[in-house]
Image (cartoon, each protein chain N blue to C red):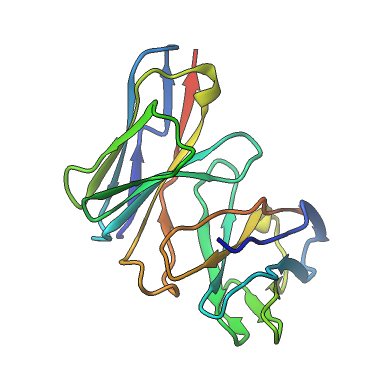
Length: 115
Length: 109
């Protein structure tokens, strides 16, 4: 089945140690998103790629970066994780956004713990 | 971006219908109404979407007010597996979902 896969499902990292989360998709969707979801909160959009174009949300900290080397893969890099960055990180994809009837497909998420 | 307002939580008995409301008074004419749900420790999953007319699929029904300022997601017979957070999201011509707070549905056996 076509899907969005996030690896790993659980990640433990040390305070201040760079960490990378990965997302891959077999849907050939041209838009990929990263959301941060803290406990009991709604997902918060960090940034997205429309094809190769990177679009950052205004309130996303500089500590968060992203790379998209090809259509299928997208990475979330946290340069110096703090305790406040512990969260579930969700990757999602969608087709070109001119059709607002079309929805997103989400991965199962990566739960990040910072120790 | 147009915003949605949902009750924080609702309860339902198993096998009973559930009506989950959503207010979106600032909706524009081209905004689609999408509903997703998020099971514990999972990513959100698509439930249903609509523009003006009521919609039905195998999971749920979506009733949209005539003025489109509100909508209701209807689960016809709630099961324990329907316990989740339900998000009502407006999808504008841009391609960004902005999530509201959602409704946490508790289903009682």
